[in-house]
Image (cartoon, rainbow, N blue to C red; front, side):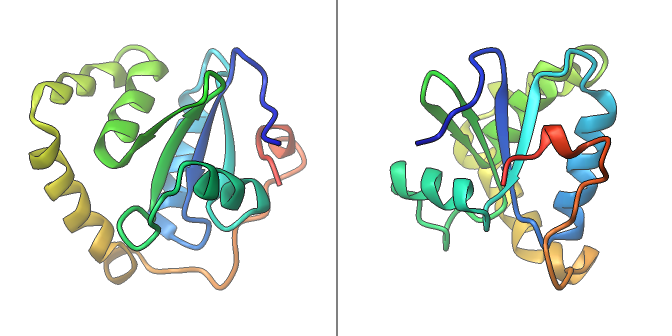
Length: 138
């Protein structure tokens, strides 16, 4: 059972990806409304959500946005909606939601496919600092 507060959104990310880790750090820094929680796709909760929504991890393996009303966003839509929820000035980038999804996701997939080559990969998921522990679900 996936339990997160109604006023929170859960970002699922590739826990061994350096680009994803940097993106999570960016969101934490700019999350002024304390809206986001985080978990790795590789975590038990990540696996539960992947199973619940029947997500093919060969096609979507880098970022998901899960909300308590049981909706899930994928790829570029997830990234742009996260930016939207961060507020100004980050939310300006959400203007790209007007671009058809198949075009946005083609760019997204190209970056996702090359993210380990360009940004590197860790041996294990990041361990949050004690101050950030409450933002991460196991």
